[in-house]
Image: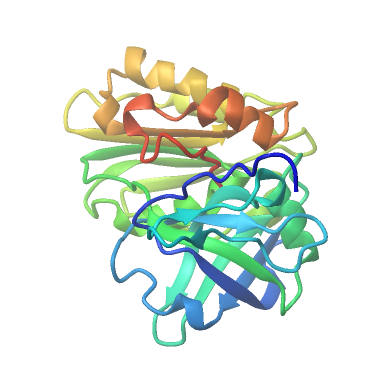
Length: 290
């Protein structure tokens, strides 16, 4: 065969797993919870920790993704680019090491979302690739300012119990409407406020930005801010948190994972997902956060 095969080295030190869809359940009108299992989940989470996994979505027409192959030199390499699955970052909703069952929540009907499209059609017996866990979560703090949109709900559910229990603060969650509310186990002094778009398109309002800017920043104590939403919102809020709220880069975690009017893949290649440059876990693979 003429032409060269582009084989990119995969992330070193990660176990690449292929997992099987066991069941799916709509937990809100827009969110599908998918339970995964399979022998390759053995050892998951034993060698590394963190709230997220990177998932590898099969290309249209594939039942399972084409995953990296370990060569004679011990290095895992991806197949040719036209067979390479789409990568996204998702927060683990639940993992049971005894039954080896992993749950991820997918927001359906997201513009340009390869993972969302896959999740909409997924049935038991389909396969997904994954590596992880990994990623950062909230740090201990005296006060918190947390803000996210629909796709950040699993991450917010995951981080809320990890917040300092005597902390104060507020969590803002922007979703389509009241039916998208989920249980968030925040500390008693941290208020959870749901913001509803009520018919406005995702990314088409400033309700999340306005809410964050309306909160008085405590004059004392150590704060921590976490923002995950559409990229323009995240850029504006990162600037606000650094310049006006006076938080250092170490005390903020901002993740812009989608951009209005572009597909996730174009966006990732161009903007590297608007993550803080100092916070890159892997410079050579793009991030997509959900």
